[in-house]
Image (tube, rainbow, N blue to C red):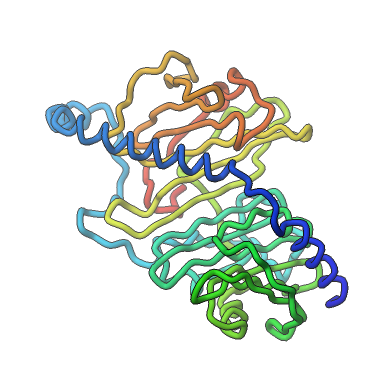
Amino acid sequence: MSSDLDQQLAATLKRHAGSDIDPTPIVEHARWRGRRLRLRRHGLIAGGAAAACAALAAVVMVIPAGRAPTGAIMPATALALPDAPGQPGAITRPEVVGADPGVVHFTTDPLVSGAESATWSAGRGAETVEFRGPTGQARFVLARSIATLDALQQTLSSAGRPQPPTDVRVGGRPGVAWFDPSGDVKLWFVRWQPVDGLWAQLDIYATTRDEAIDTTSRVRFGGAHRCGVPFRLQSLPPGGRLLECSVTLGRSERGSFVEGSLVIGDESGRWLTVRAQPAPGHDARTGELVAGPYRARRQGSDVLEMFVMPCVVEAFLKGWGNGYTELEGLAVLSGYRPARDLDHPDTW
């Protein structure tokens, strides 16, 4: 195994070394930050009017239960996905990994226990969790092939000078590890097969290779969690199906839900992303477009936006999607149905 893996890794590192940086995630992040700042500004301006309208709003709006009181810090369990009873762990059924966008077939509670936020995703051949916090940041990926791992974009920053891989043992199984310089600590990549038919990779900042390898023991493959978001899409295009679920949970006085996305698509390769983010104080202006019971508006040429209390909801037709028209995007948004409680994933 080691020889084949070394050759494939060498080819991958050579292919990526010195390559151009993909600007898409940078642009999308900039747009997201700009939109969040705009929403915050609108919230400050609308603060006085919101107080005057509070009594009326209480009559017509459903206020989510379970929001954390001001000043409260969410517990560590706020980052955990609910259990998926009856679902197998990856070690029992490796062939189901990445095939069901509603299930993550591993557990990492010890890995994310000290984090401030964690992003979980499942579908399209892979399952991941990425966390950030005062103790550092890392990403764990589980997939059924090396090609799937190689196709994922690196999300942790580094110097862009990956070093040759070396053979290691991870939980008694053969694997490889390599690093990329990134300052006082290195960005380590540890890749191994926890069971035949599955490939795992941990990207983590660590001072030594042994430290990075020891951290892999915090991942378990005998259990499963349910990946969910606080909304449903009840209107899919003909032939469309759910391809991927992604949800970010955090610990703060604002509540545990940060954002959630669902990707839908079909066998022809078309897909689009619907994302929801809490937006307290958002200027819920009436849009010029109709999406079932909602009003939506265009954000540029490739994003549709609407406000469904208490979230801004966006449909990405391009960039994060490919092939669906504006009319089809509006049809998908028309089937958006929010959950009542944003901060308890077990109720989604």
